[in-house]
Length: 435
Image 1 (cartoon, rainbow, N blue to C red):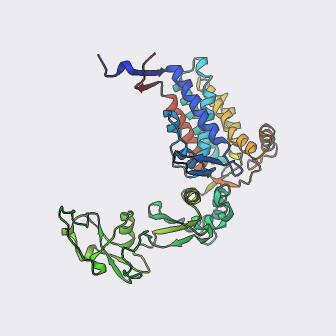
Image 2: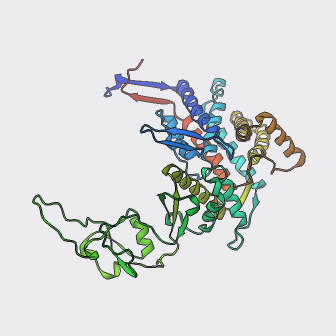
Image 3: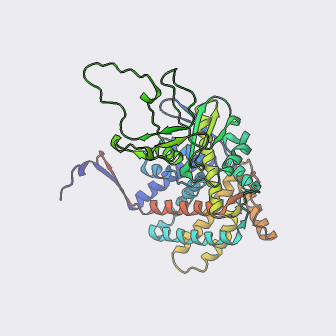
């Protein structure tokens, strides 16, 4: 059996491939670890075009980071957790680092992955036991705003995080599909506005076009409105607004908001498919968050920060249970997971103990980024939790409460990512000679 280009492929297999994966994952995790928490340091990212991005947001760092290795690209994907992406990467890197020595003890990577998964499930069960519930009430939004402020406190928008938190909380009943974030360079973040409807950023095609049209009918077309360009030159006079119509990129959102139907052919055009545009929309749940700032970099950072806050509020609506931040939840989970290890007679107990050790990476990183001694701070908090029976004690770094659902997702996503990487035992690279 002859495979094309087989002689030009290089391979990493078995233990050699696993160690290569762990080395790359550790590099990505260490690059983001110093940005963890509200006192995390910022990174200056310079792309190939020379554009500069200054941020400590995990999603932004991973998206801008120029990585070529396949495992690094896998870890650089947005885990759709909203808030806590940096924690996922740091946990995954630490889990892989702990797993590095286990194959030398003749423990198969699948058994390691199974042990991690068992420990993660046990940690999630413990989070259910230690969580508190907060009141999600339309009239009393103070607890929700406080939780959203926790997310925004470490971002570039921290100088107006109260306003951003209120924006996120006020839209708690809106589906993500009906939220659009529009931005414009100029002004300040204090000029942000909430608009019940859709903004379409369009310039006037002619200075004589009316700036305001009341009770307008809208036709939503996906077919090309312009005629094909003829080979010969012709002249077309546009004498009225009706002669020129414009579309928008968010065509589905416009259709939902304006109560119209999307038309794919001119032959389907009829009065009942037209939409309506006025001071009020047909679907008032659709909103646009209009953001202003002096440059594009901070606008993009504000968008990502607001998305994280919206995810936090959405998680609280789905499940109103919270756990305490500052590494308190991780320290609290580490002790019962370690105790559970002694009850497991199988090889998975080695991986479970490794996960218990890994959970303490989060409070260590938070204390280190806050300028404290990580070992002393973590051991002091752990001893205080056991002595005072107060599981709310954590690293003092301005972190109050986190949604329990987000914390469980963080541990689960890190475990799933590690499991996926541990199951890869062969890398093929086309175009390089095999040695």
